[in-house]
Length: 181
Image (cartoon, rainbow, N blue to C red):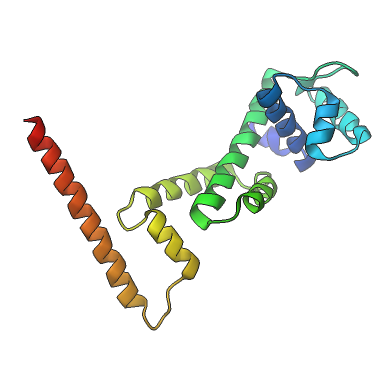
């Protein structure tokens, strides 16, 4: 199923596919009652969603039996799960959002954000983590933001610390290369 076909699924149906996928990962099998419990919804809602997902060819379902994902359903579920996981990680690691809030927010965002935008967020996060001016210290500073009156002094300190870190890493690299000779 292409991304445009995936977009035709409602947010709710994507959530059901993701829940089925997560339960299969955790338990190896899934029954309607597992979905009811995981999503905190009524059994009738689960049954209706399962019928719709079956009609769309995304799952195999028969009442009182295990539910399985079709190859297409698996691809869609993995895509939704991946978007959720990557968004949650960005919110937690880059913006220092508490885990529960990051999870809930990622669940809402995963339905509207494009894969391209998520890819850019991931690359941005990787850049921040690898840049000598970035990392945990920089991210924690984001929480407090700069006081405009002292912004340049704080920036000078940050850049100075980054240069010291670069010098240490270069020295370690040089020492490591010399010891290998």
